[in-house]
Image 1: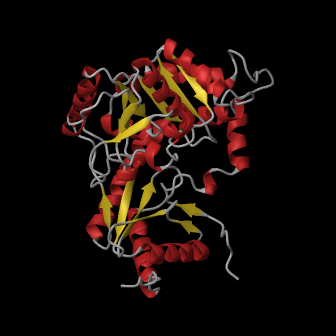
Image 2: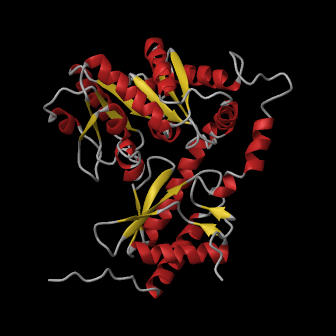
Length: 369
């Protein structure tokens, strides 16, 4: 009988269970505390994390949230209320639009203006073509569902300048800001200075347990604190979440450039081989997409076989494509995948495609004419 949850021994997926085992994470957290460490207050882990991230991002203040979904909704609500406008603009594949059940509308009555091509980054021209007043524009750096793509720095600055001239706010979905910084190679506060509000995740780049931080000017953060309480996010005893993030801030952030270089090497090997295609070429960040000449269902079954037999997890999920004979998955390089050589990844892709070819796609029921 096939194991429904085969053990993962190695992974090309950043958030593999091998990196999130409670004992491993707790041991790392214990190294940051002693008998005198308070649970809360100005010297507690949450306050320390907020101060450190406010300083890193060059903002007056920062506020912990239990989720990025809540943090971003609050930021957009505040921008909308300040400007008396209910519409914000974002890419069609923005995380708020694709993964958060349109909470901005259900909870706050906000509307999104989907801007730009589904498979390309937003451009200055896309923003200039918006004909209605906006409360804010959201930039996701990097754009995960586009393979970690980033606008060039000059293009990004031009976009923000154009948006600000209309009276709209600039908001950064910086869930993976640490990855983006490896491409821009500018101080975090210089990147964050472009934006009125900045959200960063505590469990994506930093590989913590959960949570987020919103950074901005002091008045905005004071108002955000009220909304956090209204939405049930003013939780006590959040110190374990803050400690886990501090571990990542102290250890993982400095290794991001090495992760990106390894991602570039893996992607180059994939494209030189030709059986699959890595995009972008070269990767701008430590994450990129691998596009396969095979259908999603067959690839998923092949991946399950590799996990069961070898203990190797290749992805978090497989993305379908308009062409039913193609699909893609994300490789996100971190400590979990630094031991994979480029040649080994290429060999795994060949094995994946061979196994997928051996299992025919399941056809959809034929509709009546």
